[in-house]
Image (cartoon, rainbow, N blue to C red; front, side, top):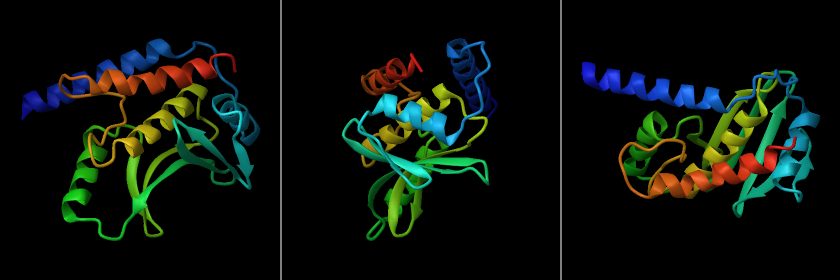
Length: 178
């Protein structure tokens, strides 16, 4: 048990240190609806504003980003499938992934659908956190039924982690000049 906890702590510490190295030492301005829109349009020039949010396409996946400035919240959402007929095994696998491989994104059920979601306070959201959250959300939607992974970290070897990291790299590159 102690080995498992130590492994989890060391893994989390390594991921946090890796993220800290990639973050800019310059303080970013607070995230606003307007700034969020500029970042999203850099990721997808065809993005469309819809009320308090946006609809865009990342890796051929439809993504919704919704803001609530009064509650200081934002949510990235990708519809995956109908929740009708969701088996106990599917539900268990999603919950396992929420614990270990989905990272900042999560599987959720709302309004009769299975969703991939990323939630964060709006004002403190940094550009790279947003981009990472979008990539993770798209990845868990794309890997539903197979790896159930955000692509941010993999436990074990194989090719999947490297392949999924390509989306992170692509989106971060698009967001560099913002």
